[in-house]
Image 1 (cartoon, rainbow, N blue to C red):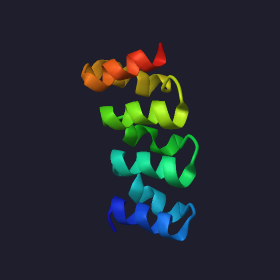
Image 2: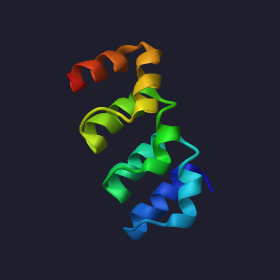
Image 3: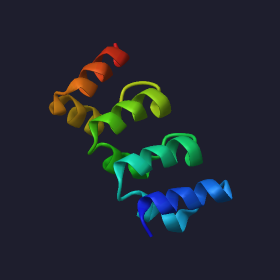
Image 4: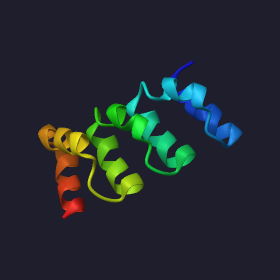
Length: 93
């Protein structure tokens, strides 16, 4: 099963499926969407996966945390030095 399929199964069933979360956590994009649409709050287990993608990290800060990322994610985002980092810095000001 792919991360996308695990996410879609959770969406279809309308609930969190803990045994599928390990699959979802393999992908930053699907981890972000799982946090937004399934967990609907901060999803700490997904943060290492999400932190590997600048776009997902920015969106996670904006849409889930609604503020500054946890330190390890914040530091990784700043080190990325790309357009999402600039958006993130503006967002947390």
